[in-house]
Length: 421
Image (cartoon, rainbow, N blue to C red; front, side, top):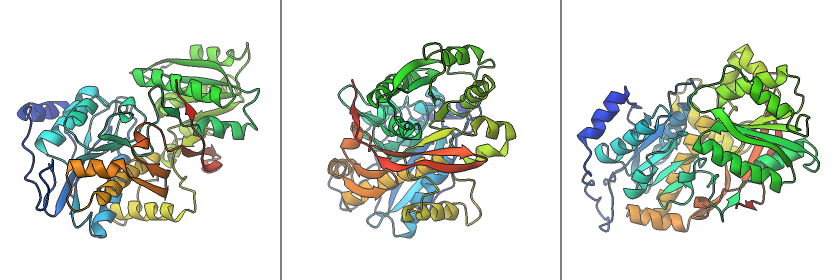
């Protein structure tokens, strides 16, 4: 049976938990039939799993529904008999507050105190615990928007690696989708803006190459917005963008930032008279429409999705919606959002590989199963490992918020990736 979702009450509690167990914990006794491999968190009838999610942040942005999405998928797995006869003992997600120290503390707590077999989901803009989880050989699943999801042996993006190293490939869903909306990329210009952080700088580098590879002229590409606080005055950023295309505005503005920044930037662009296409990868959330100012700021924006839209008639989307409702106790769940899908598909990929690993579940057997894993037709397209630890699965869609409703502007499609250098 699922345990209640548990979060850290405060940073002090997290640090206390870490200091109480800063020596390596002894793995759980191997389940009957295990072949002597690492089986921490595995018993004869259960598999212990935890998560790390930015439920609270300084800006107010929250990914808390990632936890609900994971719970929904684990609940259905348990209702169907578990994984090779074992139920998933999901501890819920630790809240890292989008703070690197808390992310590390959460990773240590889950491994050293809770002794989990896997961490799924991991959803945050910081992943300081990545090296620790890799060192401890903890299978970890999340949204592959950070470099830590690209390359390590034990860390998996639910839709592959989205920020590859040189020699990998770039997902072209965003540039190709925007090109379709604009009637082609030839002769069109784009401005890309991100936060001044390691993730933002890497995002600028990847998307600059991706849009150029699709045929756009990249008129502006800067990771210049402070990462720690939302600017109160966007005029300097707007002026640069509006003059970036040879003194004129670009055809498209792409923001690689979170909702609070997007609301400020998009509002300022519209007030400055910008009439081109605006797009971001984060604002697919009906809950954002409750406030009139937010709804106006996001109206007309095309949002990148790397999964089937909620508006899809795919039977697996209907199953997702039913699972979310069941996890919410049969009551009407919160409005569907991409965080739910992040948690759900992170859990789904973990479950699929664990099922293939068989009854004799150890980290070693899990990794062996992952090395030859593939399936088709998931809500993120066709999946394959270890391909997904170097490349994305290459699929996605665009939805546009118009008059208070999300509408599919580019259907879920898979595109050929381009080399990343």
